[in-house]
Structures are given as structure tokens and as C-alpha cells.
Image 1 (cartoon, rainbow, N blue to C red):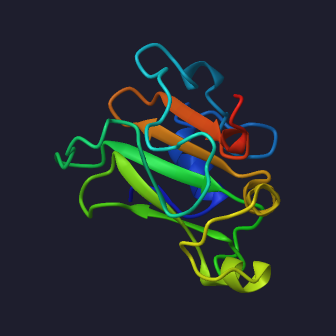
Image 2 (image 1 turned 90 degrees about the vertical axis):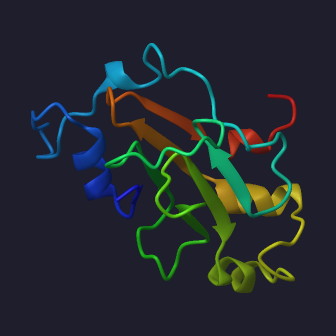
Image 3 (image 1 turned 30 degrees about the vertical axis):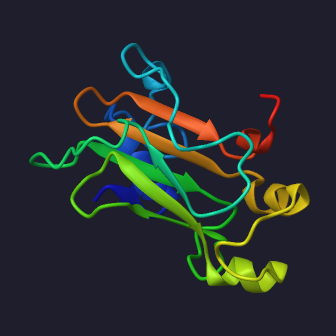
Amino acid sequence: MTVVANYTTFRAWFATSGTLDVDAMEVWPVANVRGAGFTSGFTGIGKPIQAFPITVSCNGGVSDSTAGTTYAWFLSQRTEDTAAQWLSCVETTAGTSGTVTIALTAKCVTDLGLGGTTSSLTNDQLVRILKNVHLYVQRASDDLIQWVDLLNETQSDQ
């Protein structure tokens, strides 16, 4: 598994402390977020984001198809119901976990009346799509975590 499908699995996969929080979920490892050796941002997220799909890499697109999963990804959205989500996140190349493609779903195209999944988008449409959307990636070798607020990436002055 390299793209995590839901929040419960995300917490279990990314929170590696083995200690449970008051909500009975694994304790979130704050010290691992943007830790030493994994502080650079993602490549492929242009500023401003103007259209989808986008291909995002945490390793510069280098093939990482070693034994096991090198990276795990989670795209948090406003709902875990895959039928209602406006974005999909999948490995760009099967068997390599360092690069994912984020695309608009058919549900998003229908809900916003877009011309298709590769349509150019207005700033208002981008804000609607990306509000409260975050992309996380964890490196398996040391459990360090990188994340980005995709709505923030729509702003060209950031």
C-alpha cells in the first residue's frame, strides 16, 4: 500500500509511536513532521495550481521500486466517501511510491459543471476544490513526514 485510502489507516500508518491518544488512535508523531533530512517540499506542484491532473513527487521522480514501500501518501479531503470525493490520488507508475498523480474525479466535473477532468480552472473553482485538502507523504526508512496544504499552493504570491 502506498496511497492510503482513509483517515483511520492514515493515522495507523503514519503514527508509528505505538502509543494511543485519548481518541484511541495512535499518537501523531509531531517530531517527525518535516524532520531533518525530509524538509524539502514536493516537486510538481506549480504555483499557482491552474489545472489538473498534477504529478507530485517527493523524490524528484526517481524510480524507487525497491522491496517494500519506500513512501506512503495520504490525500485528506472533506470526505472519505470515495464516491463523493472531488480528487483522486494514485501512484503515477505502479510499483514506485515516490510520485503520485492527483486528478479531478467525474463527481467534481459534474458538481462544478466543468468541461472535463483536464479543464483549466478559475481561482474560485480551485478554492472550492482544494479547501481543507492536504497531501501527506511519509518516508519508510525513517518515518519522517512531509505535508502541504494544497489550497495554499493555489496562491501565486506564496
